[in-house]
Length: 170
Length: 149
Image (cartoon, rainbow over all chains, first blue to last red; front, side, top):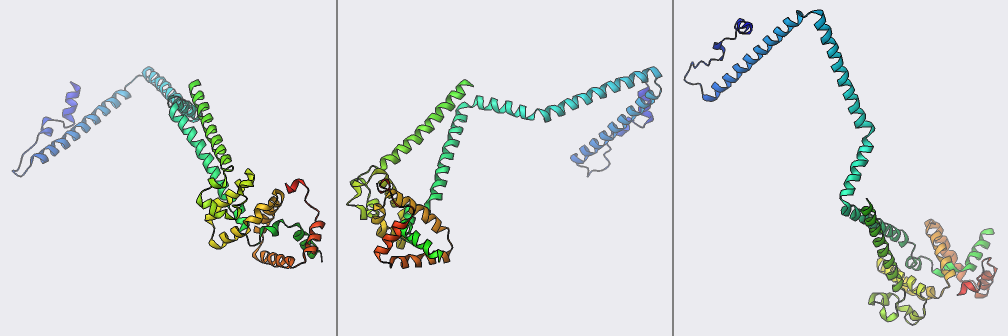
């Protein structure tokens, strides 16, 4: 009863939702847009009214009710803070555990793929090591020694070493 | 989890077998006779044709390595390889190993030092053979019978 009166007091009458067709140039879309706008305005006014009513009633609450509401609010806030702290700890401290658990599950469920993956990595490592060794030894291979600026006899002749040492000592 | 470990073990064994067989394949390559060599290998190793079948497996393996690296060289270097191959095959393992070490040291020298060493080698070669023999005998690392194997 009071609500109906207040709605009337706040200017919410049936005239607000009426659409006035004042010209022949109004299209169907413009009529629909106008109706939507007016509906939104009406809803906002209702919300404002409800808010005012609640505030008015809250100001009239007795001390006992206010005390109970305050305690309930503190309990609710405390519970929410506890949930948020627990959530932060779960996402931070147990991330590795969570990751390990999920990875373990994944490899457990995809054994064939995991085995192939490990075998592939081993083969790849072996061939990469061989390739590195091949490239590394290429310049030091016997073929390049034979094609050196000095003949192999120069490197193997111990008399040449002795002679070089004797020349250096002078 | 036990099945997973079993599969992991099987795959590891498989990889090891592959590696083992690849090693055996390399070892078999070292036992090939002159007739079993391909045309490219025979062309490179032609200075050793008459004595190839008397070479020991490890000697053949080293010579096959030379034939493998040969195509990667310039024509002037290929010519040097062919010219020096016979003497190289007649060196003892000790001499060859010594030459490899000295070659590595030589590679690390500057261009000036290399030129100087080349000049000194020519000078040394002009010494009488008796003098060079005396210098070899004076060397602290004279060869033993085992080295001449």
